[in-house]
Image 1 (spheres, helix red, strand yellow):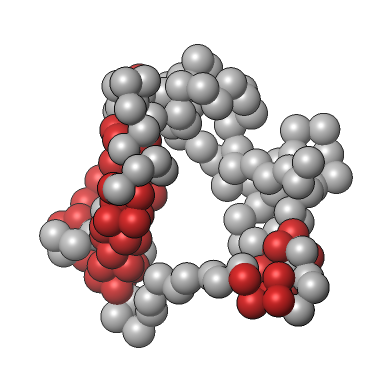
Image 2 (cartoon, rainbow, N blue to C red):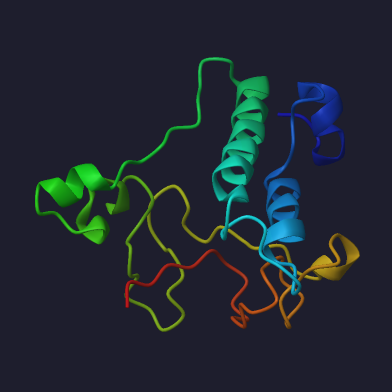
Length: 149
C-alpha cells in the first residue's frame, strides 16, 4: 500500500481520493447559490461524470473493478422496500438504520468510516462543524451515518 501523500503518484493521474470526490461534489451540490448536481437538467450529466471519475479512480488501483449502479426499482417491483435490500445487510454496507443514538454505521465494510474533520483547510464548503459535508448538514458526528426515518 502506498503512503497517503503519494497515492496519485503511485496509482496514476486517474486516481482521486474519496475526500477529493466529495469535495468535487460539494463544489457544485453544496453551493448556497445553486445545487447544480441534484436539480434541473444537469443532474444526470453531473452524477454520471462524478461516477465516471470514481470508477476511473477505482480502476487505477484495481483494473478488474467497476462502479456499479443499484436499480432500486427491481426491489420495488418485488414489493421489497429499498432499506430491506440485500445491499443494506451488514455484509454489504452495514445497517440502513444503525441501532445507536448517532446512527453511525458499526458493521460491514463501512463501519466507522470517518468524515474529514477540520475540512476548512481542504475545502471552502463544509458543514458548520468543519466536516466535509454540505453546509446544511448540521450533523457533528464525524462518521458516515445512515438512518431510515
